[in-house]
Length: 270
Image: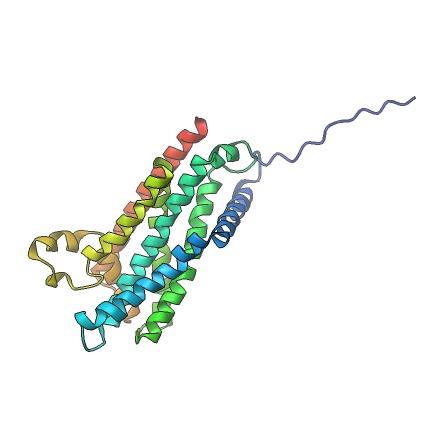
């Protein structure tokens, strides 16, 4: 009688080797997970697509006539509304990350042969795709309402790249908030991204605000970010506002990404 020795077949150990290719594969998988979760959630779809369009309609149709009766207000307000919508959409990531922490998804991923931080990168990639998609109907509605940008092809490429930079920076800050806060507390981050643009040049010129507010409005991040986007959309070469905006975005990105790595690393070890 012949004895056959069975050697258990183990799945390929993806935790060793693979390098960049494996990391990209893990991030793509986690991004797909987050996109599917968005598509299956009515709340997420409303937040991502209906609210930005509603905000655009409110400012142009309801407030626009009172602020600038000649109908040109739409050309002024679109950049501010778009940046508000991108920030608001990026803030939704905080809730998703907080849910992953609260439901044990993060701890579960620790046990899988995937790059642990892929779950965070997946949230960021999904946020970029979701918010760029949400920006399309916002611009479309604005065009229907009379928005007439003067940007050429190069200008629109600059608009898209700058929007991606905005989303990535704001999303990493939201990821950090999601890692630190409970699900309920993480939802309050939306308020910050929804309120700060009103204290900038996004909706009315800073000169029309109370004088005691000028210092804050001129030197908070939203004003140079919105002015840069306004220049790009109007076909004007961005001036110093571009470098100030990029400095703000780089600072926000560093705080968000490095802070997230430190907090997430602590959770993985814990």
